[in-house]
Image 1 (cartoon, rainbow, N blue to C red):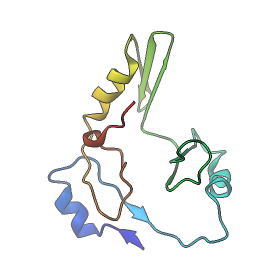
Image 2 (image 1 turned 180 degrees about the vertical axis):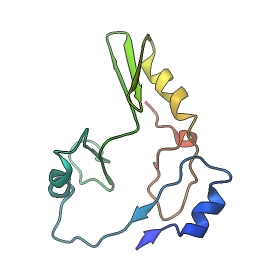
Image 3 (image 1 turned 30 degrees about the horizontal axis):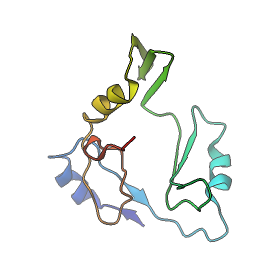
Image 4 (image 1 turned 45 degrees about the vertical axis):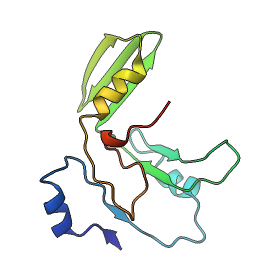
Length: 126
């Protein structure tokens, strides 16, 4: 089952520029790692797990490939790559820079979705 429905997406697009769409699969015999391995050879594949404390099972797993935006920071330098174009600049506070970028994305909070769906209105706390 895929949610939300097309009509709901069209309505939400008036107020949000990032709308989460989820397809629920029953996969009793699958694990996130096993599913991720199917995508691992694709360009810039990633697996994000919502594990707390490093010893509990994750509640949510996000698997993706070929992200439209990548931000890396190391030793005072930040690189933002968007659609193949790189911007490199000095940054003493990369977390603040990341928060500023994420504020540009607005996504609705939907009750059937995980708490983080990529919108800047619910920026993580560090």
